[in-house]
Length: 80
Image (cartoon, rainbow, N blue to C red; front, side):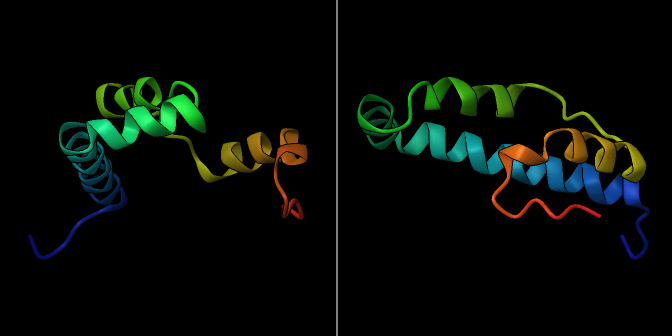
């Protein structure tokens, strides 16, 4: 593949992330359980959701509106 549009690039990125998450789930169960018990509650469930669900794709303008509505959740919240 020589040329790729934005849709193809985001699709490849989504597949790469899902593959990585599946690898971590399948090869690091003990570590994930440890983190789930002591630090990150429901970590394994959240990772499984990432691996199973299709990612929602939004336009740039919509993304900025979502970020502006929720900027109180971010440390660096100077969203432009």
